[in-house]
Amino acid sequence: MFDPLWKLALGLVTGMIFGLLLQKGRVAKFHVIVNQFLFRDWTVVKIMGTAVVVGAVGIYALLPTDAVSLHIKPLVWFGVVVGGIAFGVGMAIFGYCPGTSVAACGEGRRDAMVGVIGMLLGAGLYVLLYPQLSDLLNSWGDAGKITLPEWSSTSPWLWVGGLCLLAAGAFAVLMRRSGSKTPRLHTARPQRHNSV
Image (tube, rainbow, N blue to C red; front, side, top):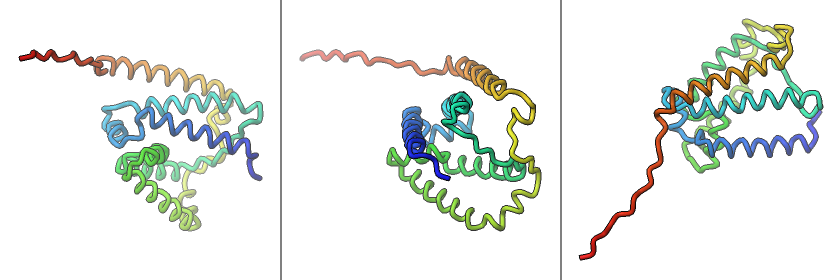
């Protein structure tokens, strides 16, 4: 069953807006992401953390209206750990994540274009090898299709609220730490030219 056209169009528009915000937030730049891994620039964490919080609030607010639906994937620990390591190593080497690499392509960055081609080839290779890899990836720690609210028998809003508080605390710490390092804008004073 396919999603209705309006939902696909909404996804396209929100995706374009998200890409624009990534570009305006400067996370479509190689050095910003590399400096995040070096703990020198927290722009990526701030932007992605904001996206996660807004997404969580938005999804759980829209769920009762049937405007969105959750597609829970099985939690398989081995696949999650291996995938997380591969993703992190690839992002550190490439200097972009999948979303920021597409935004960087929109800026005309050739290094990102090469990386996106590599991601597409890698995804195609994974699809071809999936029948052989599925048994290995699903071999350890299959917890089934479960969410944290289901696991703890609590309201999803308890977790969303906790996520918001955690994000607010992290932002306060990062703002305090970077407050003294924030560069100030200096206006250039006009030069006086003595006439001879």
